[in-house]
Image 1 (cartoon, one colour):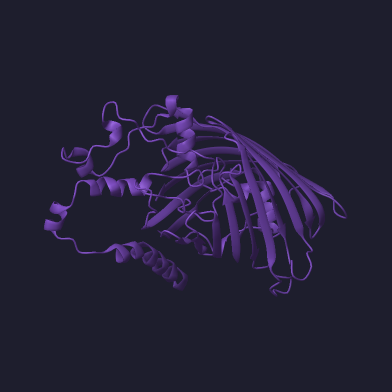
Image 2 (tube, rainbow, N blue to C red; image 1 turned 60 degrees about the horizontal axis):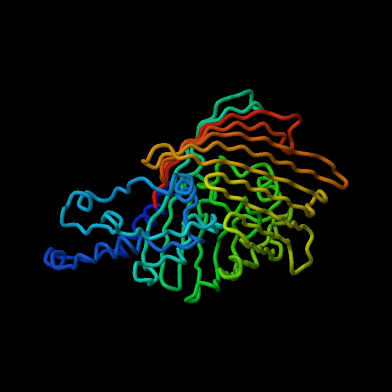
Length: 420
């Protein structure tokens, strides 16, 4: 009862912050006298001018796959749609040129909120806003390892608040369905050009491309065998307390370099170990290709005992995306190697934001040295997407995971929705 009370209190605080920060009395006369352009400027500041780093992966993929990059109609508040006196967007005026939206590659997501650092309004000025975001994942599964006993549950119930200022951003999020309720809590300081950034707090360490990708844009229901084993089981990467510096040079093939120190793990007696180090470098030599490399080192101050290095590549051609990642290093049980590949195709259906997305992936993990073992997984799935707010995922995975005697089949269905 006490734990439920704390969870409810935390959710209430998160949901109430924007209302407290944004509450400001406005009389009817002031509303009537407001200039018509204020509404259009407000709308532009909320969604215009997104950079390649903050472009939404799902909307971008759907838009690229549709003929001519067309998107479905955007619905707004009733007064914006039905009021004849409401400002008319430029795109609705015959012959008017529609502003181009920069659809870059998917951004590495250190938190759950989309990257806000490059958001600008229609006058090129950085936006200033506070917003609430959240998501819910409901899953049903049947696993051969448990004799296909059906399992129903809420895999994730995330809620958070993100604040954006010209040179400072902050994000706090919690998962009410997780044992560790706090997920992300960090601040990010950036210069005016957004080339240099400094992070402090709890966020994802820059290791493994699969780990950095948002679970919402990932076409699979989980991050896979390799990420589970390296991050969850062996403590390489994942969300941690730390500080990190970042350099972004768009003119140099979109170069992005991140490096930081993070809280170390615990020894068998529960004692906290010295800090870990992580770094990642990525470039985009072509519009359709992004390549990167990352590394994670444990106990960098006292002498590294476990480490891993990974290289990854992502190829995007319209609605088709291909990703691959290899990793090698040393764990507590000895040296290891891993390989991961994933392919998915986003196909728009109609003009209302609907899309279908078949996906297939494969992974392999090899433990070497004193203990030799192998793991592998083949996953296939089919997703139904609605704009950027809902998705239904059907997935089948046949895998030999660490601890399994033989490969087993798992079938699962997941429904997910989010707001932001």
